[in-house]
Structures are given as structure tokens and as C-alpha cells.
Amino acid sequence: MIIKLSSSLSKLALVIVCAFILNTGITNAQKFGHLNSAELLAETPAWKSAEQQVADLQKNLESQYNSKLENYQTEITSLQKRYEAGNISQAELEGEQQRIMELEKSIAQFELDAQQQVLKKEQEVLTPLLENAKRAIEQVATENGFSYIFDTSVSSAVVFAQDTEDIKALVKAKLQ
Image (cartoon, rainbow, N blue to C red; front, side):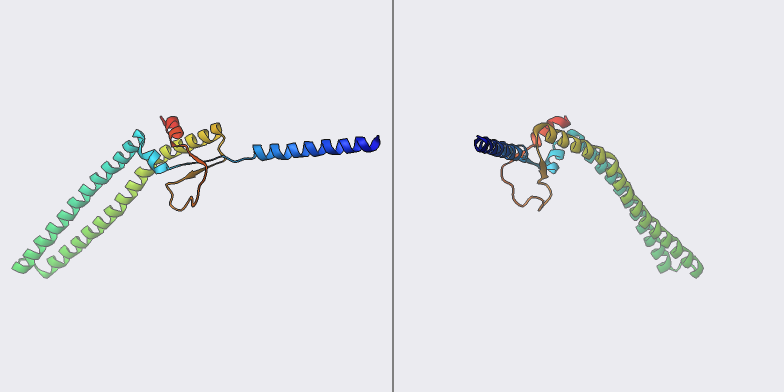
């Protein structure tokens, strides 16, 4: 009787271990999803508005830059004409050359400042949108049981994907 009981316990233990292994395997099954974040963001009105703000700033700064370049060209042309006509002394010429060099420095500094302004504006208007998208993706992943979400907008980030679910529509619904 003891042998039969032991054998029955062994079988029961084996059944419990097998059930545990199967259950663990099932609960640890990973669900994968993907989306193209660039497409997702490009389709949102807030992203389009943010891009327009950056484009407007770039256009304004470019206009100012072009105005400075035109002024610079005018100054050089004027100085050249005065020099060719002999209407400028050597001391005046050196002073004008110094002034033109200062204009060149000013234009170069404006260009650097403009680039920094554009980068700052991009960060200011796009960062909150990126954070919202990240939160929406995390919510969709949690609510739908995804273990991993891959972004297909990044080249070479996903080399192969099988049995993944495109979650762009779910995330887009969270963003609206």
C-alpha cells in the first residue's frame, strides 16, 4: 500500500509540475506589436501644428538672414565703387574693411543663433508630443498585454517580425 501511495503521489506531483510548466509557458507567452511612430505622429493635428510653428520660425529667420546678406552685398558693392572711382583714402578704406569684417561676423553669429533658436523651438513644441505618444504606447501595451512594441520607423530596428500586431490605430485613438 505504501508503494501504491508513493506511486500515486509521484504521479500527482508529476501532473502538478507539468501543469505548472505549461501554465508558466502560457503566462510567459510574449505578445509583440509594432507601429511606425513617424507615420503616427505625422497624422496628428498637434504634430502638424508644431511642425508649422517651426517652419514659420525658420522662414522668419531666413528672411532676416537674407536681408542681412543683401545689406552686406550692398556695402561691399558701394565700397568697391568708391575704391575704383578713387573717392576713398587708404585710412577710410581700412576702416570700411574693418566694418565689413564686423558685418561678416555679425552674419555668422546670426546664423548660429538662428540654428539654436530653431532647435530650441523644435524641442519646445515637439517634446511634449513625443512624451504623449510614449505614454499612449505604454497604455496600449499594458491594456492589450503586449510584451514588446517595435518602432518600424527606425531603419534596421526590426530585422524580422512574425505574428506581430500593428497598434498604430490603438495608439492614435489614445492621442485624440
